[in-house]
Length: 117
Image (cartoon, rainbow, N blue to C red; front, side, top):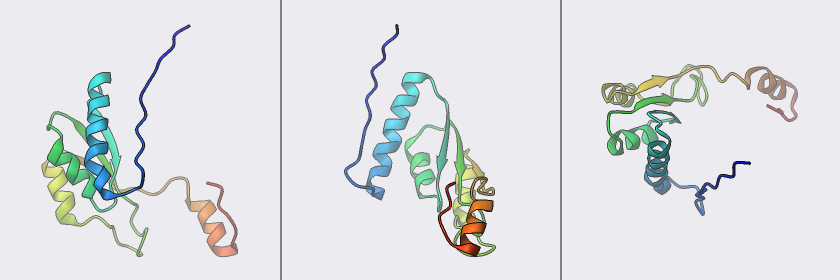
């Protein structure tokens, strides 16, 4: 039988102040495992910009934004300026549909109730 032990880190509260620490922890774990590709959520680009400042360009980074229209119909929350900065820094930025919430959310919005997805 193989037994493994791993550390888990928790923050006392959610806060933007945790971003750099979380990035450094992810990079450290990535180094241990030989991971060179990171996928991160970044609605406005703040997290991705922090990663760009901290991490060497040797990483393949995919940034996933909110889908268009999440807050306001037809709008993307990440500005073109920030998106361009990330792309110029070697990151890939993806904005796509939220695959699991369309039907369930549509029903709960129209008829009320809870969306299990």
